[in-house]
Length: 151
Image (cartoon, rainbow, N blue to C red):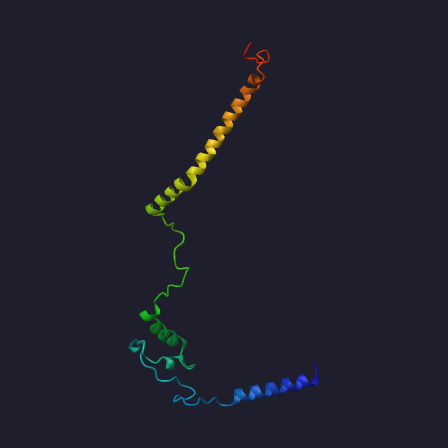
């Protein structure tokens, strides 16, 4: 390491030790360094209560959690916002209403039935043309000698 980095690290380490050794003073706090602040009973807390006293670093974690549980048990925090799209149960199928099924049947008959009829008519026409084509070649010549049915 270069000499500049070593000087920087030494200075940083020294300042860190000095700040840890200096007594921590909390400005504006009535509690002394070793004791927790006076807290109201958790049962008496409501939504309008001041929860800042419970969030101080000297308060035990279990007491903090109990105060937060009391705060968030208020019904105002249990309202769904309606924007959560993943709250539905998508494993249950939603049946199609009868009115929608009736509309779908009607649309199929109205839109697809004429096309199906046209396609069926075209197939029938092709079939008839093929039958006529099979019969006509013998009759077009007019020569009964070439017509196998005429004999």
